Length: 325
Image 1: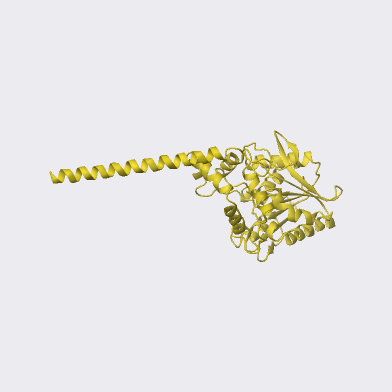
Image 2: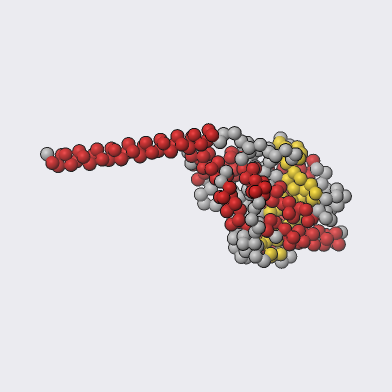
């Protein structure tokens, strides 16, 4: 009889535990759903932005410098936008015509997929035509290096030269890339919105990528990072991007850039934690560039933390092109 009661009591204990777990899960689910409902209105783009049509959608862009100057087109990396290029662009504009745009899936460009390497290269091609930018120097940061690599392979002779900044131009697949897509709703949306609305988290992540020499983001600069992550379609675009290989081409295709004798330059932060120490030299060798320009005390966002050095490297590269033409 005592044994029966003990088993019965144990059974009730497990049942109570199960019920408690279910109640907690339901409560968390309701809390997540309530947060999603409360944050359902997307952010709006700032007033006064400029756009140009690139096929089925509008691409946001900015331009600096005299139109008569030699053109330089800046292509940003993942989780970035035109704003990330502003410190470099304003310096380059003293002697060049400079334009930067938000690649599809990021910034304030309209969110229309499929967000692949090929579609991003098509966007660049359409942007150059729409903006009447003939034979520009193309500068790609991080993921942007993969975009310009694909473009010059698909459009031989269209560019005067390429500059890879903190990027090797290679496609890559990382473990766990499918995890965001496996997370059920409403948890996935609640987690995303909670992260992109957390000013301290965004500032910390930005600082870690930028490195020790990075200036602290002002409130306005932080908004330029957060804002594009909260507009309509941003969640869906980033989910699609995260489930695909990193934008880029193969090592063999980079070799085709070298074979084409297209002038090239590689610029890296010397302390870039996103790549191995030998990546800058390997990248330069693959695309036929001279020894890479390494910026001391600089992380993965050299265009932000050391804009003067990046602009000087691009300007010197461009002057070299003018001297050989």
